[in-house]
Image (tube, rainbow over the protein chains, first blue to last red):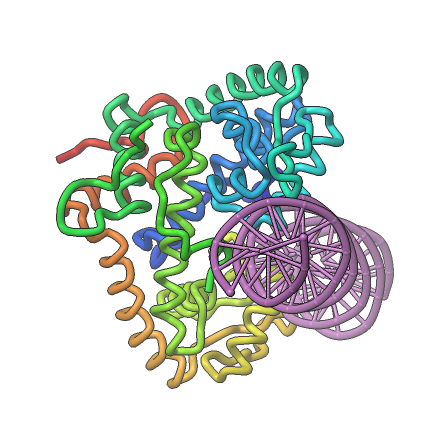
Length: 166
Length: 166
DNA sequence: TCGGATCGTCAGCTCGACTGACGATCTGCC
DNA sequence: GGCAGATCGTCAGTCGAGCTGACGATCCGA
């Protein structure tokens, strides 16, 4: 359930003064809180956030090799091995040797994987909503837009980080 | 230098389509990028982000015990031990047994610690600016405000979670 | 004064991520 | 056709951050 449970009991005190304005602190703890909510939401499906993300990406794209998958998600390929091992053990996806290039394994969702993904996605969306609860529609959208901008900074002066070109 | 260096070489591709809109992904990667910038900025001073945060909090507050420090930063007290060990080894802070309660160690900055903190803080601020480069003043402020709102949600309907007062 | 709480410490564990190596396979080039 | 070099999946080992559980020293309230 997402590290950093610390003394959760000792009633939610605000941020320590000198850190309240540090972006690093804010980002870390926002991420932590969402991870926490997300983990609870996904727990009933026996998967965690990373695993859910893998399923999402596989579902979205044409059959991918492990390496392609890893690259898209910016995960190390050795890390992906374990991740896929796990999901395969849970029968949510399957490895198929690629007949065109026998070095590769093509990874696809199983029926069970698709079902689980559908339900898990909805549960996770709900957690995200709770996370954003209290924010206006605009603020939520704004947050995402700003985050994309700082993650994928415009290479030159112009334009926000490009936002996918489908 | 902040985990997740992955295939940094394979030219910065945008977010995988199905993840581009997931807050979890965005938060994680924003945090990652900032941590990366911050680590580079702090490296010359021989400290990392966590250590810098500890120095900041100590500097800000009256003499704190290790436990108080840990609580303020929402760090486990056993984790704090190692953190302080490290900073003490670097002579940036010192432990003093508290004469009033001999179970406690009061932690204070050394002169060297104060100097290092001053310089490191400025370097880190600069990194933060680079991170926010491309965002307008308003967007930067907005980002912090929104993050605070989601980290410390208003307990009931209305409250400090408020996000638009400009 | 004595039992229970508090504080600092330590050993051991988990988890995500990385490095380095290896065998199997593919590809370009002679 | 044959071979050097790249690519892919795998595995063992390591690292950092964080946690749990235990322990000794100390404090405090009944």
